[in-house]
Length: 249
Image 1 (cartoon, rainbow, N blue to C red):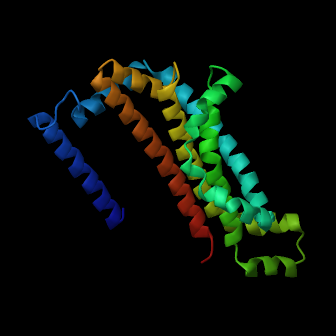
Image 2 (cartoon, rainbow, N blue to C red; image 1 turned 30 degrees about the vertical axis):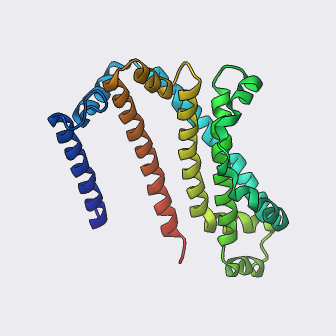
Image 3 (spheres, helix red, strand yellow; image 1 turned 90 degrees about the horizontal axis):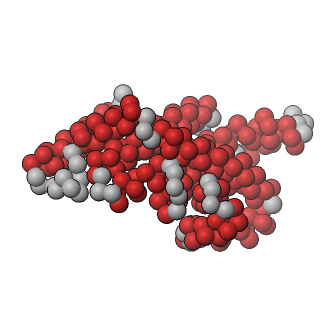
């Protein structure tokens, strides 16, 4: 492990210990925040009992559907923006200000369109995340060095072969950055949507525990969610680092 990694872990451990001491000593009201040890114990108990397994699987399935749709559609839009520079220039102001408008305002519309099921959550998460993938894809294609394209032309590669063997591998790190953002935004969209209007899912269970004053359960579920998202992001980051190592400087 690198020195930066050791420092990062040390800071996290120190912060957890300080928080534990503050909660145990009474500096922080336990009604508002339970000690991290109780959070961890509650999270383990929840996972062991399997009480919320169905809700976790429901949330995970919704996130996967939204993320896959976002990656596929975002990649297609990004490739289109790269292929048509005029379209990219025309759409650039809209892309720059896209996240200034909260996507959750469309949730009632999606309920009318899709009904009271999981698809409104998928739609909210999709519109929240696919633009990040589109921007990363367009930037990735634009980042390919001209010398690589000239080399492809000198070898008389077709347009399809140039994209497949030159453009895609060279721009792969940018694509994977878009995938990471799409997954993260999909989690945000689904969990936030479950907070607003849902009868199942991890976000709904966290909101229900909050409203029922079940503080330990609420923080246990939140810890499960945070650890799960961190593990997913860490796995994607490790794959991205390997991809970047294969791209010549």
